[in-house]
Amino acid sequence: MVRDIAFKFLLLAGFVTLPLVAFSQNLDTDDNQSETNELTQLFEEISRNPDNLNNNYRYAKLAEKMGKYYESIAAYERMLIQSPSLDRVKLDLALLYFKVGSMDEAKKLFLEVKSKNPPAQVAQNINKFLAQIDGKNRKHNFGANVTLGYGSDSNPSASPSSGSVDVFGVGIPVDDATSGQSDDQKFAHVRLTHSTQVPYVKNTVWSNEASFYKAVQDNASSLNTTVYALKTGVSQSNQNGRLRYGAHLNCSNVNLAEHEYLNTYGYDVFMDYIMSRKAKLRLSHSQDYRKFQNSPTVTTYEDRNGRASEDKLSLTAMVTPKDIVNASLSLRREHAGVDYYTNRSRSFGLNYTRLLENGFYMTGGATFKRTKYKDVDSFVNPFVVREDNERTWTVGLGKNITSNLTCGFVYQDKKIESNIQNYEYTNERITATLSWRY
Image (cartoon, rainbow, N blue to C red):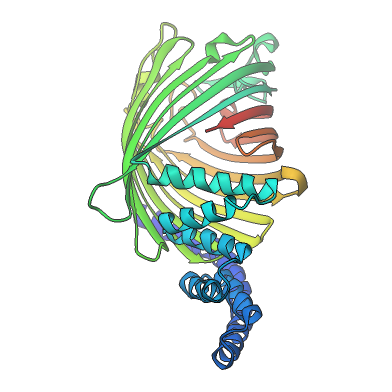
């Protein structure tokens, strides 16, 4: 059974991702052929007349566009040998040195241009790169992200949309005063990061992360949530940077209504592959061990103790410089202390981002999820094994106010259909956020 599911999962992944990959690669193929011909022609012209600065500059820009950074660097260096005062060429060469990791050479050229009092915008951009170079040259790098938000839900408690619940297979109406009540929440999320190069191991980074999340409901205090999480791991890239892989360990603590609710610890492994200049593929596997805690009013949480694992395949494609598409497929399995909580689910997600003018951006997405449980819950319905179908739509608008400050608004519509009416519900959510990063 598991092999059949895995086979279907991989087959579906191929059907979904291959058209996107093919589309991206077709764009690359057409562009690459034309660019390769033009680059070859420019090379022949430079061979006949190596002192032609215009041809050298065109060659350098085209080679950089094609990802042939070292050929582009050689062309810029030839130009500076002939004309050492070309500040624009120095800037372009400094940017290339930055891309390939030659930080000392990049810093030297940036400082040379800056010393000649360039326009204010150019000096500002140079300062940004100098700050990044100093950061990369530091032994330890630290970062922070703080998000404040306000949200409104039409049905935060996931009350059944039918207005009734099954008890021993018999439908019982739910009091209107306790079902489907809307509520607002305020939340904050703080994330701290640290990374450092692993000594004596090339292209290897050790990273650490600590995060804190707090959400407070206006009315439904039983849904107040606090989350503490820690994560640490290493990642490594190959020489050309197209392949990156790594592993992390993680743990978290969740409090619900000021009582300890869930403790988890686990790991994840991943691999990123740069398929082309416009497409990146990620494969990942994670496994968590979950320990629930009963609350003063709920004595069944601990029945869900067990492990959860997830396999995920995702593709990110830049269709145009302003249009980004992300598609993902996942297979998740949750094992619990009782069979009616044990389940497996498959989900597919598709997200689109459009970069607009003046720092604005627009997002839209859809997620579809199907979950099957292992056995009946006799207290709810002794004759039916639960199956859920979930779909979620989102649309959002945001703006990068500064390079460190972003605001956003998101509307989400979620609906779950189930063969047991207790678990059918709909919820609409509107969220506004303000994020600062360092």
